[in-house]
Image: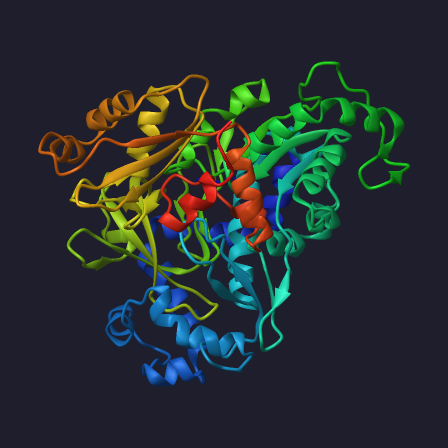
Length: 511
């Protein structure tokens, strides 16, 4: 039993308030088939009377296999004509439920996408969040006190042609929390809407440093590293503002005061960091304790995306598939889809989801690995984006291999792109304390990737070309992406970039 009854009062109260959710979630450990059939029934009820439902013959009472036969797998591009109609605010396109807004993806590794939000979908996402919080509270009663800092982006930044609000999912989730949860946030939501990026980041730190922060949640661990760099850069100004009860950059007065040490260090009783840990994020997670100046437990934020919440963290192990949320399928190397109870530990699968927002058998393009089971429910970790690798002549260099080479060389950031030529090569930009030569990086990559080693040995691939960037280059790249409309809380530090994004990064200049 993941969430036993009893325990300290804050946990016991929250568990009682969510007892139905807990019972359904834990029932899925023993009977995942029943849990997913129940989700299919919800999806079919939502599809009833919609254009998509009629076009695909969706009807109540369909079995899982009948549903799979009726609806083909679709990536975002194939669903876009339907989504364009949703953006136009047409009713009953994908679902009979009213679309309340669109959420926009970060577009770090491709063009940003806009995805619909409906009431039932939002409730599923909120339920997964409540299980996550319940697990944190079960493990540490002191998290019920103090403040909970979250880094989010505005829930609404623009509108579609049809008048639907568009914004970030992190901001939407923040505003959807109960009032008593939002009260624990040390940073007023309005701060996240400050247009100037550096002013916004300063204001977040100014508010947070005046509070007793017990937990810090950020989708990307690189965001935590960024805020700690900002803290060091602005420490003297932050000290003055905290001592005077002001925020000089915004001309505000009467804010909470606090005494800060002369040297940059956290004044918080920080007990937990929540962030993505899988795939390329592992490179940045390893650097979080040193940036914070303290060894704090870091819990996975779950297998999530703007499309939904697919595996929820309930302990310090890997997240557990949320079978009481969306309908999940997993495509193996053989191209065949599998249900959650048909998976094997240690294997990797491409994630496919059907959600209450009208995404039916939606191919996310995310690769997840099964690391174990709770009963018969799989534990999942994000590995990488499908196809997100560099391969001109079959070398297939992955983000994980690039970051392993960066770690071996002591680099603090690294990004790569392909240069196409008769004999192509990798273009690599890095930030690090010392100069790295192409030969040194080449040896590190050859040690990580046998196919790369073979292409280099046979002359089909030339040696990499390197650009050493200043410490602020990646922060500047992130700021540019945010200025273009990407949700700040969701923008990842780039590892593999398209040629266009590569030029954008390089244009921030060498030190």
